[in-house]
Structures are given as structure tokens and as C-alpha cells.
Image (tube, rainbow, N blue to C red; front, side, top):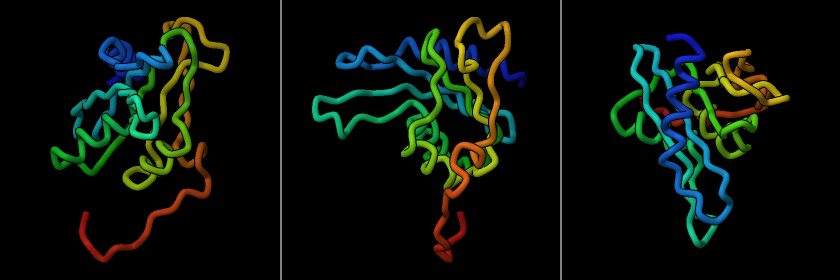
Length: 136
């Protein structure tokens, strides 16, 4: 799947975001290594701390369906570039330290003009995974 196609799926998912407090709506599209795509949106909550980001929503959906191998995640926040927050970076690192993170370039603009692609390990160079002794 092409990066732009995955980004467009994230853009479409963004319409379902629940962001009544911030108005900052985010959509994510997570691509597994076998070609499945799981979407997620941010879901805000009155307690703020219970809010969940789009990236974690997509991962939780995928993991709950038995997925454990991921290739890329596209993130759409409208015309604003949006990288995953620190919590999302560590959360994703648990499953896919080398996942490709696809977003708008720092200047924003039209995704048709190009997207920014980075490896998660570039965004979180000192991420960690505890050894549990259990199979994933």
C-alpha cells in the first residue's frame, strides 16, 4: 500500500474523532505486515486524563484482533502536521520500534505534494521494551 493511500484512510477516519474540548481531531491508519489496515481516532473525555490518542486507538484495535506485526502508521490532523505524542511513541515502540510514521511535512500543506516519513526509532531513540518471558 502506498503511503498516500494510507494517509487518505487516516484522513477519512479523522471524521469520527471525538474532540469536543480541544477541537483537535486526529485520525490514524495502521498497516500490518500482512496488509490489513486498522483505523483509530482520538477520543477526548471530561477527565482529560482518560483521553486516548488516535494512534493508540488503532493499535489497541489491531492488537485486540490478534495482530502483532506492523509496517506503517499514517496520522492525519487536518492541515496541521502531527507527530505522535510521547505516550504514543512508547506505546507503539512496544510492538514496532521500526514502524514507519507517515505525516504531513513540518510546513503542512497538501499531502499530494509529499508526506514526511520517519522510523519510530528516530522519534524515540531510547524507547524500551521489557522482557516478559511470554510470547507475543
